[in-house]
Length: 75
Image 1: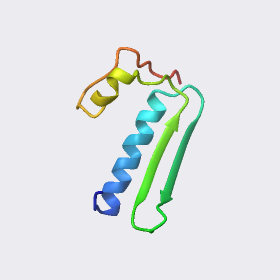
Image 2: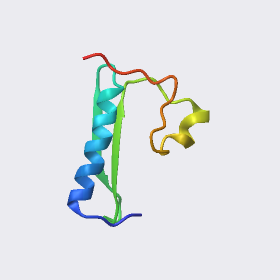
Image 3: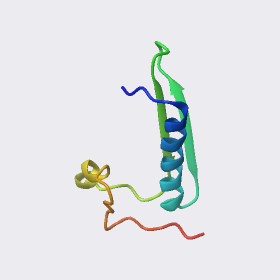
Image 4: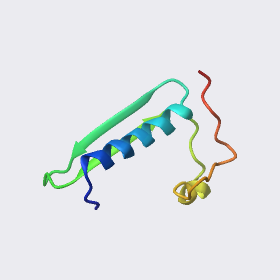
């Protein structure tokens, strides 16, 4: 769990959406949900881009890491 300001949340969502757009094919979905105790917010961004291989998922939070399989979406 992390406590943060609205400005930090905006930056997090902006970054997630930016990455989803870069690696999308056609669609992006953003959802914000509150847990049943109304204490936590879950932010989920999904797109229809290529899946990250299982053996590379632990590396995705390493700064400047890019999977060889990542391809940019054409605009």
